[in-house]
Image (cartoon, rainbow, N blue to C red):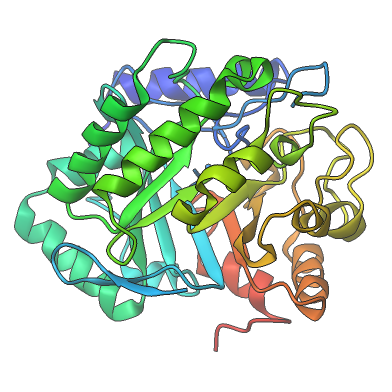
Length: 358
């Protein structure tokens, strides 16, 4: 990706979020701070990886598949997911498969309703032969390549974007540029708080799946963990309702367990069994108890303290939590925002106890 003013602009936006104590863009969706960009409309925020905004102060906060060119992808767990939005010097497309050993899903950010930006745009600008070569190497390494939609700078519901039109346009991009699927990094917090996001996301997801059939493409969502709260917090609906309606069209959730407060999801108890605090009932096993398939709840964490406003765990602690979860029957995997901080060494350390890479 060529260095441009947009990179500077995006970095300043991210620094502003940090300086003001705002949640980084990406899956407050709390993925992490969006840092890449070669387009003035690029998303800047906290990932699939992959925006992060924070919830309002009111406390609202399988199977192997084959893509259009015959590339085998997998929607069965565990999923080891890394987002990429940051510009990396000397980079020309996604990193070599050997640089992300230990992951099996790489998500490029972002695809907006208006078109691609950041790493998604970099992928788009590659020639077809280069894309094909990269895809072949990823296939050989067992890595699925996805694109992340929306991010922290887009508010599609509040902005009046038609969900079906947006889904059709994005699905066409997925097919044209030969990726294995799409991650929905929806961060329209006002719409989620007032309930209008629920029907919008249901329609959008159904339209996506109509264009990207199961058995050929992966569809994931990247909600913040508090969005799995019940009607006492979200009387007009939450991701529990979305899952009931269109969960069968969503392969798994890259849940952002960060950027939701300095003490939220910061130890194994709060992350796995009893979130308490501001957002009770939204730890991994509490979300499962509310009706979400346990093995679709991928644990999302920033790769470093600098990759999010809060919620960071060192790799040894996170590895311990992963081991504890596995002992209780969980097998979903881990997501991180973002590469290159979240490199092979990072995921190898996180997987070391329960799911060793080698």
